[in-house]
Image (cartoon, one colour):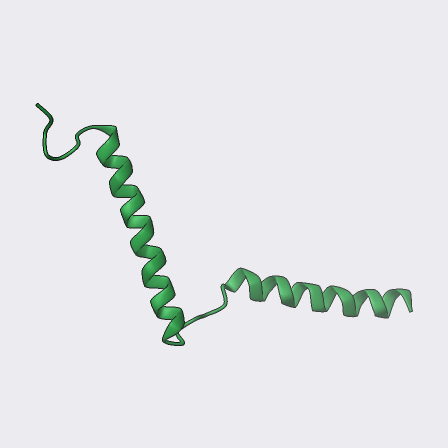
Length: 61
């Protein structure tokens, strides 16, 4: 006879998958409400590219 709830690694995997789906749903809801924010690393990368391009123009022009 099979238990009603899976045990062992399968249930752990299912719980991980369900938590992942819930995180994605929550993020989509936040974005729809306008709470979207750009990650800090993206802003830092954009700043580095702008400064690098400006420095390249100043050096090689």
